[in-house]
Length: 112
Ligand code: 5GP
Ligand code: ZN
Image (cartoon, rainbow, N blue to C red; front, side):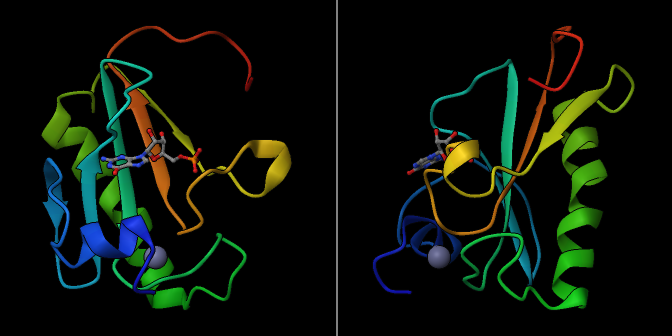
């Protein structure tokens, strides 16, 4: 999608602090971090949400990027939280499927 900000980042048209990349996925630091480590993982191809028909191979590549990001950001041992906001009740604000990886500090118990 030409006007999707994460598509533009995926194409290298908008700068981002890249943590990990391969032919299928890109991981970059969130512009407004909610924790000392806050990295987003996206497929380069556009899917609006996790429920938007992401092909299994692409989904696998996104998931495989999670521990790679954790290693690169130094939180593999201390732990991290993985969030996929989906739709209005989750306040999804960028409608290009992405995975948040958050860590670097103890986080509250529970999910929300
Ligand atoms: P959502 O609320 O959709 O799950 O998360 C979208 C995330 O994208 C937010 O945490 C927001 O800070 C981040 N974000 C939005 N625009 C940009 C951008 O241009 N660059 C980067 N690196 N992150 C962005
Ligand atoms: Zn997109």
